Image (cartoon, one colour):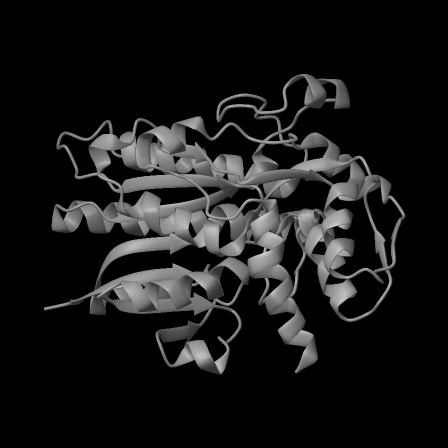
Amino acid sequence: MRKKATLITGAAGEVGQALVERVSQQENTHIISMDIKPLPPELDSKVQHIVGDILDKSLFNRLVSEYDITHIYHLAALLSTSAEYQPMLAHDINVGGTMQLLQLAAEQSEWKRNPVKFIFPSSVAAFGMGSLENKAANPRPQEWEWNNPITMYGCNKLYGETLGIYYSNHYKQLADDNPTMLDYRCVRFPGLISAYTVPSGGTSDYGPEMLHAAAQGKPYACFVRESAAISFMAMPDAVTSLIQVASAPREKLKHQIYNITAFSLSAEEFAEYVKKHFPDAEITYESDINRQRIIDSWPIDMNDDAARRDWGWNPDYDAERAFSEYLVPNIRKRYES
Protein backbone atom coordinates (compact mmCIF):
# COMPACT_ATOMS: atom_id res chain seq x y z
CA MET A 1 0.00 0.00 0.00
CA ARG A 2 1.37 3.38 -1.00
CA LYS A 3 2.22 5.79 1.80
CA LYS A 4 0.28 9.08 1.88
CA ALA A 5 2.44 12.12 1.17
CA THR A 6 2.38 15.87 0.63
CA LEU A 7 4.50 17.20 -2.24
CA ILE A 8 6.07 20.67 -2.09
CA THR A 9 7.85 21.90 -5.22
CA GLY A 10 10.19 24.89 -5.21
CA ALA A 11 10.99 23.97 -1.62
CA ALA A 12 14.37 25.73 -1.51
CA GLY A 13 12.86 29.12 -2.44
CA GLU A 14 11.73 31.87 -0.09
CA VAL A 15 8.15 30.66 0.27
CA GLY A 16 9.16 27.01 -0.01
CA GLN A 17 11.52 27.01 2.96
CA ALA A 18 8.96 28.70 5.18
CA LEU A 19 6.23 26.31 4.04
CA VAL A 20 8.38 23.22 4.61
CA GLU A 21 9.10 24.40 8.15
CA ARG A 22 5.41 25.02 8.90
CA VAL A 23 3.99 21.88 7.29
CA SER A 24 6.61 19.70 8.98
CA GLN A 25 5.36 21.02 12.33
CA GLN A 26 1.64 20.80 11.68
CA GLU A 27 0.94 18.02 9.20
CA ASN A 28 0.87 14.37 10.25
CA THR A 29 2.03 13.20 6.85
CA HIS A 30 5.14 12.28 4.94
CA ILE A 31 6.55 15.35 3.17
CA ILE A 32 8.35 15.13 -0.14
CA SER A 33 10.08 18.37 -1.08
CA MET A 34 11.64 19.11 -4.44
CA ASP A 35 13.89 21.76 -5.96
CA ILE A 36 16.87 22.05 -8.27
CA LYS A 37 18.82 23.11 -5.18
CA PRO A 38 19.33 21.33 -1.85
CA LEU A 39 17.52 22.45 1.28
CA PRO A 40 19.41 24.03 4.20
CA PRO A 41 20.58 21.30 6.61
CA GLU A 42 18.11 22.33 9.32
CA LEU A 43 15.19 21.65 6.95
CA ASP A 44 16.61 18.69 5.05
CA SER A 45 16.28 16.43 8.07
CA LYS A 46 12.54 17.15 8.36
CA VAL A 47 11.49 15.99 4.88
CA GLN A 48 12.39 13.67 2.04
CA HIS A 49 14.10 16.13 -0.26
CA ILE A 50 14.67 15.45 -3.94
CA VAL A 51 17.08 17.54 -5.98
CA GLY A 52 15.50 17.40 -9.40
CA ASP A 53 13.96 19.21 -12.35
CA ILE A 54 10.26 20.08 -12.32
CA LEU A 55 10.15 19.02 -15.98
CA ASP A 56 11.48 15.52 -15.30
CA LYS A 57 8.40 13.40 -15.95
CA SER A 58 10.14 10.15 -15.04
CA LEU A 59 10.85 11.51 -11.57
CA PHE A 60 7.16 12.13 -10.92
CA ASN A 61 6.22 8.75 -12.37
CA ARG A 62 8.49 7.13 -9.78
CA LEU A 63 6.97 9.22 -7.00
CA VAL A 64 3.38 8.24 -7.75
CA SER A 65 4.38 4.60 -7.99
CA GLU A 66 5.60 4.78 -4.38
CA TYR A 67 3.34 7.38 -2.76
CA ASP A 68 -0.30 8.36 -2.57
CA ILE A 69 0.12 12.11 -3.05
CA THR A 70 -2.82 13.79 -1.32
CA HIS A 71 -1.67 17.44 -1.45
CA ILE A 72 0.53 19.32 -3.90
CA TYR A 73 1.86 22.78 -3.07
CA HIS A 74 3.30 23.87 -6.40
CA LEU A 75 5.74 26.71 -5.66
CA ALA A 76 8.44 26.06 -8.28
CA ALA A 77 8.76 29.03 -10.64
CA LEU A 78 11.19 31.34 -12.38
CA LEU A 79 10.43 34.74 -10.83
CA SER A 80 9.42 37.96 -12.53
CA THR A 81 12.69 39.78 -13.21
CA SER A 82 14.55 36.59 -14.08
CA ALA A 83 11.73 35.53 -16.40
CA GLU A 84 12.11 38.70 -18.47
CA TYR A 85 15.68 37.75 -19.30
CA GLN A 86 14.81 34.14 -20.11
CA PRO A 87 11.20 34.05 -21.37
CA MET A 88 11.42 30.63 -23.05
CA LEU A 89 12.88 29.05 -19.93
CA ALA A 90 10.25 30.82 -17.82
CA HIS A 91 7.48 29.41 -20.00
CA ASP A 92 8.93 25.91 -19.79
CA ILE A 93 9.17 26.03 -15.98
CA ASN A 94 6.16 28.15 -15.08
CA VAL A 95 3.70 26.72 -17.59
CA GLY A 96 5.17 23.36 -18.60
CA GLY A 97 5.97 22.40 -15.01
CA THR A 98 2.54 23.49 -13.79
CA MET A 99 0.72 21.61 -16.52
CA GLN A 100 2.72 18.43 -15.90
CA LEU A 101 1.83 18.50 -12.21
CA LEU A 102 -1.82 19.29 -12.90
CA GLN A 103 -1.97 16.33 -15.28
CA LEU A 104 -0.41 14.11 -12.62
CA ALA A 105 -2.87 15.34 -9.98
CA ALA A 106 -5.82 14.86 -12.35
CA GLU A 107 -4.77 11.31 -13.21
CA GLN A 108 -4.22 10.45 -9.55
CA SER A 109 -7.60 11.94 -8.58
CA GLU A 110 -9.32 9.88 -11.24
CA TRP A 111 -7.42 6.69 -10.47
CA LYS A 112 -8.11 6.66 -6.73
CA ARG A 113 -11.54 8.35 -6.97
CA ASN A 114 -10.49 10.93 -4.42
CA PRO A 115 -9.49 14.50 -5.33
CA VAL A 116 -5.87 15.52 -4.90
CA LYS A 117 -5.65 19.02 -3.41
CA PHE A 118 -3.57 21.23 -5.69
CA ILE A 119 -2.50 24.52 -4.07
CA PHE A 120 -1.15 27.07 -6.53
CA PRO A 121 0.39 30.40 -5.47
CA SER A 122 -0.15 33.01 -8.14
CA SER A 123 0.97 36.62 -8.10
CA VAL A 124 0.02 40.27 -8.29
CA ALA A 125 1.91 40.06 -11.61
CA ALA A 126 -1.25 38.53 -13.12
CA PHE A 127 -2.66 42.07 -13.13
CA GLY A 128 -1.90 44.71 -15.72
CA MET A 129 -3.37 48.13 -14.97
CA GLY A 130 -2.58 49.70 -18.35
CA SER A 131 -1.65 53.15 -17.05
CA LEU A 132 -0.88 55.07 -13.88
CA GLU A 133 -4.29 56.74 -14.26
CA ASN A 134 -5.99 53.34 -14.18
CA LYS A 135 -3.83 52.31 -11.24
CA ALA A 136 -4.86 55.40 -9.26
CA ALA A 137 -8.54 55.05 -10.17
CA ASN A 138 -8.71 51.32 -9.37
CA PRO A 139 -6.56 50.80 -6.26
CA ARG A 140 -8.13 47.47 -5.17
CA PRO A 141 -9.04 45.36 -8.22
CA GLN A 142 -10.94 42.12 -7.76
CA GLU A 143 -9.63 38.79 -9.02
CA TRP A 144 -11.15 38.99 -12.51
CA GLU A 145 -10.40 42.66 -13.17
CA TRP A 146 -7.45 44.10 -15.08
CA ASN A 147 -5.96 40.71 -15.98
CA ASN A 148 -3.64 42.12 -18.63
CA PRO A 149 -0.12 41.24 -17.44
CA ILE A 150 2.87 42.79 -19.19
CA THR A 151 5.52 40.33 -17.96
CA MET A 152 6.25 36.75 -18.96
CA TYR A 153 5.93 35.74 -15.30
CA GLY A 154 2.51 37.40 -15.06
CA CYS A 155 1.36 35.73 -18.28
CA ASN A 156 2.61 32.38 -17.00
CA LYS A 157 0.80 32.77 -13.68
CA LEU A 158 -2.46 33.83 -15.30
CA TYR A 159 -2.25 30.86 -17.65
CA GLY A 160 -1.47 28.58 -14.70
CA GLU A 161 -4.62 29.84 -12.97
CA THR A 162 -6.67 29.03 -16.06
CA LEU A 163 -5.10 25.60 -16.44
CA GLY A 164 -5.98 24.81 -12.83
CA ILE A 165 -9.62 25.70 -13.46
CA TYR A 166 -9.62 23.55 -16.59
CA TYR A 167 -8.19 20.48 -14.87
CA SER A 168 -10.48 20.84 -11.84
CA ASN A 169 -13.70 21.63 -13.74
CA HIS A 170 -13.45 20.48 -17.36
CA TYR A 171 -10.81 17.78 -17.73
CA LYS A 172 -12.03 14.93 -19.99
CA GLN A 173 -15.30 16.78 -20.56
CA LEU A 174 -15.82 14.89 -23.84
CA ALA A 175 -15.19 11.47 -22.31
CA ASP A 176 -18.03 9.03 -21.74
CA ASP A 177 -17.24 8.55 -18.07
CA ASN A 178 -17.22 11.21 -15.36
CA PRO A 179 -13.73 11.36 -13.82
CA THR A 180 -13.06 12.51 -10.27
CA MET A 181 -11.56 15.97 -10.66
CA LEU A 182 -8.65 17.38 -8.69
CA ASP A 183 -9.36 20.03 -6.06
CA TYR A 184 -7.61 23.19 -7.28
CA ARG A 185 -7.15 26.21 -5.02
CA CYS A 186 -5.16 29.34 -5.86
CA VAL A 187 -4.05 32.43 -3.95
CA ARG A 188 -2.65 35.54 -5.60
CA PHE A 189 0.21 36.89 -3.51
CA PRO A 190 1.35 40.51 -3.26
CA GLY A 191 5.06 41.24 -2.86
CA LEU A 192 6.43 38.90 -0.19
CA ILE A 193 9.03 39.82 2.43
CA SER A 194 11.05 37.23 4.33
CA ALA A 195 13.34 37.82 7.29
CA TYR A 196 15.20 34.57 6.72
CA THR A 197 15.98 34.32 3.01
CA VAL A 198 17.72 36.78 0.72
CA PRO A 199 15.64 38.22 -2.16
CA SER A 200 16.16 36.27 -5.35
CA GLY A 201 14.83 37.81 -8.55
CA GLY A 202 11.40 39.24 -7.74
CA THR A 203 10.43 42.66 -9.06
CA SER A 204 9.04 43.63 -5.64
CA ASP A 205 12.37 42.82 -4.00
CA TYR A 206 13.36 46.48 -3.68
CA GLY A 207 11.53 46.43 -0.33
CA PRO A 208 13.37 43.55 1.32
CA GLU A 209 16.61 44.63 -0.38
CA MET A 210 16.34 47.97 1.47
CA LEU A 211 16.06 46.13 4.77
CA HIS A 212 18.92 43.73 4.19
CA ALA A 213 21.20 46.55 3.03
CA ALA A 214 20.32 48.71 6.04
CA ALA A 215 20.97 45.84 8.46
CA GLN A 216 24.44 45.42 6.94
CA GLY A 217 25.18 49.14 7.00
CA LYS A 218 25.33 49.30 3.21
CA PRO A 219 23.88 52.05 1.02
CA TYR A 220 20.97 51.04 -1.20
CA ALA A 221 19.83 52.53 -4.50
CA CYS A 222 16.15 51.67 -4.92
CA PHE A 223 15.29 50.73 -8.50
CA VAL A 224 11.82 52.35 -8.41
CA ARG A 225 10.80 55.94 -7.72
CA GLU A 226 9.65 57.07 -4.28
CA SER A 227 5.94 57.20 -5.16
CA ALA A 228 5.76 53.66 -6.61
CA ALA A 229 3.19 51.74 -4.53
CA ILE A 230 2.18 48.08 -4.38
CA SER A 231 0.93 45.69 -1.70
CA PHE A 232 3.17 43.54 0.50
CA MET A 233 2.91 40.65 2.93
CA ALA A 234 5.20 39.17 5.58
CA MET A 235 6.25 35.61 4.81
CA PRO A 236 4.51 34.01 7.84
CA ASP A 237 1.18 35.30 6.54
CA ALA A 238 1.90 33.95 3.06
CA VAL A 239 2.50 30.47 4.47
CA THR A 240 -0.56 30.72 6.71
CA SER A 241 -2.70 31.58 3.69
CA LEU A 242 -1.56 28.48 1.80
CA ILE A 243 -2.34 26.20 4.72
CA GLN A 244 -5.66 27.91 5.42
CA VAL A 245 -6.92 27.71 1.86
CA ALA A 246 -5.83 24.06 1.69
CA SER A 247 -7.74 23.30 4.89
CA ALA A 248 -10.94 25.19 4.03
CA PRO A 249 -14.04 23.03 3.43
CA ARG A 250 -14.63 22.77 -0.30
CA GLU A 251 -18.25 23.86 0.05
CA LYS A 252 -17.17 27.16 1.61
CA LEU A 253 -15.08 28.17 -1.40
CA LYS A 254 -17.09 30.22 -3.88
CA HIS A 255 -14.04 30.79 -6.08
CA GLN A 256 -10.90 28.91 -7.04
CA ILE A 257 -8.69 32.00 -7.30
CA TYR A 258 -8.37 34.40 -4.38
CA ASN A 259 -6.55 37.69 -3.94
CA ILE A 260 -4.82 38.03 -0.58
CA THR A 261 -2.93 41.01 0.79
CA ALA A 262 -1.77 42.59 4.03
CA PHE A 263 -0.59 46.20 3.58
CA SER A 264 0.20 48.65 0.81
CA LEU A 265 3.23 50.95 0.85
CA SER A 266 4.99 53.28 -1.53
CA ALA A 267 8.75 52.85 -1.84
CA GLU A 268 9.18 56.02 0.21
CA GLU A 269 6.86 54.73 2.96
CA PHE A 270 8.76 51.45 2.99
CA ALA A 271 12.00 53.39 3.37
CA GLU A 272 10.53 55.35 6.28
CA TYR A 273 9.86 52.10 8.15
CA VAL A 274 13.40 50.97 7.42
CA LYS A 275 14.86 54.25 8.70
CA LYS A 276 12.70 54.09 11.83
CA HIS A 277 14.60 50.95 12.83
CA PHE A 278 17.92 51.72 11.10
CA PRO A 279 18.31 55.51 11.44
CA ASP A 280 21.65 55.49 9.60
CA ALA A 281 20.21 53.71 6.54
CA GLU A 282 21.33 55.36 3.32
CA ILE A 283 18.58 54.95 0.71
CA THR A 284 18.55 56.70 -2.65
CA TYR A 285 16.36 56.26 -5.72
CA GLU A 286 17.68 55.33 -9.14
CA SER A 287 14.62 54.29 -11.09
CA ASP A 288 15.24 51.51 -13.62
CA ILE A 289 12.86 52.28 -16.49
CA ASN A 290 12.08 48.64 -17.25
CA ARG A 291 11.50 47.44 -13.70
CA GLN A 292 9.61 50.66 -12.92
CA ARG A 293 7.26 49.95 -15.82
CA ILE A 294 6.48 46.53 -14.33
CA ILE A 295 5.75 47.95 -10.87
CA ASP A 296 3.55 50.62 -12.47
CA SER A 297 1.49 47.87 -14.10
CA TRP A 298 0.62 46.28 -10.75
CA PRO A 299 -2.21 47.63 -8.58
CA ILE A 300 -1.64 49.69 -5.46
CA ASP A 301 -3.49 47.05 -3.45
CA MET A 302 -5.75 44.03 -4.08
CA ASN A 303 -9.34 43.37 -3.08
CA ASP A 304 -9.21 40.32 -0.81
CA ASP A 305 -12.82 40.51 0.43
CA ALA A 306 -13.68 37.09 -1.07
CA ALA A 307 -10.87 35.33 0.82
CA ARG A 308 -11.88 37.02 4.06
CA ARG A 309 -15.51 36.01 3.55
CA ASP A 310 -15.09 32.45 2.25
CA TRP A 311 -12.24 31.04 4.34
CA GLY A 312 -11.56 33.57 7.06
CA TRP A 313 -8.42 35.13 5.63
CA ASN A 314 -7.04 37.79 7.97
CA PRO A 315 -3.30 38.59 8.01
CA ASP A 316 -1.53 38.63 11.35
CA TYR A 317 0.99 41.27 10.28
CA ASP A 318 0.14 44.82 9.28
CA ALA A 319 3.07 47.04 8.27
CA GLU A 320 3.91 48.16 11.81
CA ARG A 321 3.90 44.67 13.27
CA ALA A 322 5.66 43.15 10.25
CA PHE A 323 8.63 45.47 10.73
CA SER A 324 8.79 45.64 14.52
CA GLU A 325 8.05 42.00 15.43
CA TYR A 326 9.14 39.92 12.44
CA LEU A 327 11.40 41.58 9.89
CA VAL A 328 13.74 43.83 11.86
CA PRO A 329 14.52 41.54 14.85
CA ASN A 330 15.25 38.52 12.66
CA ILE A 331 17.22 40.40 10.00
CA ARG A 332 19.31 42.01 12.76
CA LYS A 333 20.14 38.55 14.11
CA ARG A 334 21.14 37.38 10.65
CA TYR A 335 23.85 40.01 10.28
CA GLU A 336 24.95 40.24 13.90
CA SER A 337 26.02 36.60 13.99
